[in-house]
Image 1: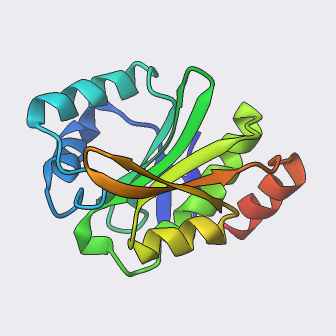
Image 2: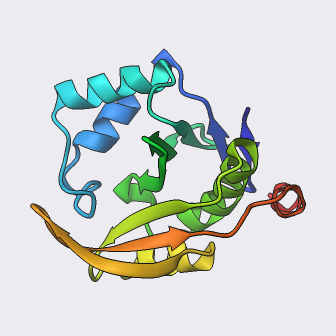
Length: 172
């Protein structure tokens, strides 16, 4: 299913989007706040998993007028743990695209998958992502550390019901 916002389309992935996905995820600037860039081989492997529906719920973010690939949004699911993630090409930062797509995307996924508990992680000091997570209802849970450095874990624990999803869909 495609999700439309005022400036974007969130569409299921197809083979035609592989090059864009790899380019987005192999760029060190784009992935600076996401533990660094992927190698081409690892980006290809992840893309193939997306096509096979093995990594959760993902959508490509496409500009609805130019049809340019803007980025990637997803909720991954592993062992009963659900995590929201998003990445935009640096060319589209600070233009409101992430805010525009995350609320309807996240509401839709919560509704479709009946999710009641979702986490998101963000590097300490990455204020744009922190503000965005708080805006869509995530709350700070704790500070953690891994091999890439300190990060915050945010958690969404409210139930996304049909009324909220329908309201989000109507405003998109």
